[in-house]
Each structure stands twice: as C-alpha cells, then as structure tokens.
Image 1 (cartoon, rainbow, N blue to C red):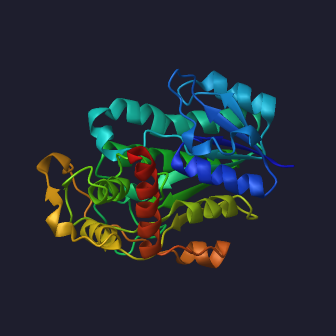
Image 2 (cartoon, rainbow, N blue to C red; image 1 turned 180 degrees about the vertical axis):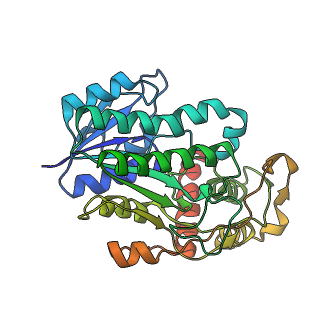
Length: 322
C-alpha cells in the first residue's frame, strides 16, 4: 500500500485527490494546521479513511518530522493562500505560505526523505499578462497579483530542487478548475450559488466584477487525476493542465442562469468593487504535453460543469429553505 501525503486536504482539490487516491488503494495522510476553526466538510464522507496529521507550511520542523515519521511515497503540496483578491490585502502572508511554504516542504523532503515524489500545485495565474496564446509549459510568466508572483516562486523553486538535488519534483500548471466544492468567494461558485438563491426567491440580484475576463475552466475531479499521473512517470516534468478552451465570465453567467430558465441580464450587476487592481484578461492553455505524455484528457465539459454546480447549490439551499 503506497502512502501519499496531501497538504491542503480540506480544500476542493485535496478532497477530490483524497477520494481518487483511496480508490487506488493508497494510505492517505492529510496534513492540516493546528486551528480551532478547521473545517472538514469537504472530506467528512471519507474522513474515517484518512489519517489527519498536524503540520504547517510556516514551520520547517513540523515538515521534517512528518517526513521522518511517515516517509510518504508521494507528497502533494496543495496548501496555499489561494484566493487571488486576498493576496493584494495580505501579500506577505501569501508569500509566506504560497511561495516559501513550497521551499520548506522541498527542504524537508531533501533532508529527511529524498526518495519521496513531490507534486507542486502551480497555477495559470503565473501567466497573468499573457505573452502568447495559448499558454504552454515554455510560455514566459508575467504574474499580475501577489498570488501569481508567489506561485511563480513555488514553481521555480520546485524546478531548482529537481535540478540541484535530483529530487523527483513536478509542477502541474493547472488552469481554472471548479466544482460544487469550490469556495463561495470564487467567481464560478459565487455565480452558481447566486443563481440558486435567485431561483429560490432568496435574492434578486448578483453583483460581479469584470464579465469580459476569459478563463479556461475545467472540472476539479478530472484535474486531480493529472496530478497523480505526473508522479507515475519515469522522469519528473512540468505540465499544463487545462481544457484548451476559453470562455468569458459572461458566458458562465449565461449558462448558469439559462439552466434554471432565467436571463442573466435581468439579475447581474457589475460592481467596480469586484474588479482586480491588475486584471488578467485572457487565460487559455495548450494541453498537448499532458495529453501526449500522460494520456490525460478532461472529461467534463463546461456546460456539464455549470449544470453540476447549479444543481448542487439548488439542492443545498433547497434543504436550508425547507
């Protein structure tokens, strides 16, 4: 039975990855910070199958101790301050966790368990003000937020440890991936949750920022398989994981409202408060490397994803109304 350590296991990606690994027969260790407010809602249905252990990306010693005690075969570093707007308000915290936390994890592996295979959750936000369309593994980075800047550091320190210390270390440059487990602060879930509230008579408008921003959206449940496949190869490498299609936020709104028989133009209000200080206008990836090397392709279409999320929010809010 192989052992996998997953940081950020209580998040969207961590929960889907944990499910995937359990089905593969893994012993799954979920690393969480000591906190009085840790929520296990996304993993409560599998929590009895996971070993929850305490560790903190701020604390080098805790990471070394985990490597020495558990000696995981695979390490998936999904933990981060991952909400882009917050990174402008808390840039130092974002750097400490999202950037330096990666270095601390890699250093713990180097010191205590260098045979572990390491996955770093990189991000399409690293491309920011894009240098070419579509974006691929060789596209230069131009981040447009403290979050994007921190992810660039995490990406390159992973490459550096791979090349300097001969670690098996990969980065997955994941484009936007969504699900019913997405946090309410993210625009896709904000939209589907807002649609459900309006449909159920709990609200009469939805305030959003830039509707013209374009993103490459996929289903998080598909993307965790790509993470796992990266660590099953003979040699480590970096991969863009995406659908290869781009859509406006406006299109996402239209699809979500249409699913419940409404017109988004009757309810959506553009609010300057939700515009970013520096906008990322267009993200669309080239998935060729992941397809050719890993054999990975996304299965869930955007239309299916939108319907899945709206239906889940209708069901969730419907229970509350009753």
